[in-house]
Image 1 (cartoon, rainbow, N blue to C red):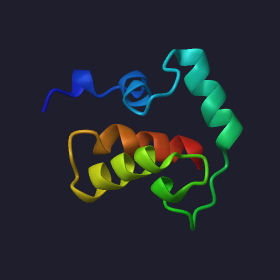
Image 2 (spheres, rainbow, N blue to C red; image 1 turned 135 degrees about the vertical axis):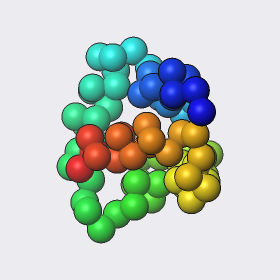
Image 3 (cartoon, rainbow, N blue to C red; image 1 turned 180 degrees about the horizontal axis):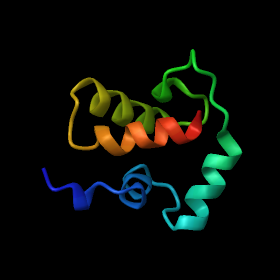
Length: 76
């Protein structure tokens, strides 16, 4: 697995969101804290396509899972 491809910046770009560091921090600040009983992919701020991507990558423990877990932690 090439972990260099799976940064927070690349995850935000993959999700179709602004991916510069300031935009990422603003997104996290705006959406936290996410309740512990809400799965990340079920958060109300995702589009349907973003939700599907996040869910599939976590369930399959795919290459993106590590950085998605990092985002999940930062949103809590």
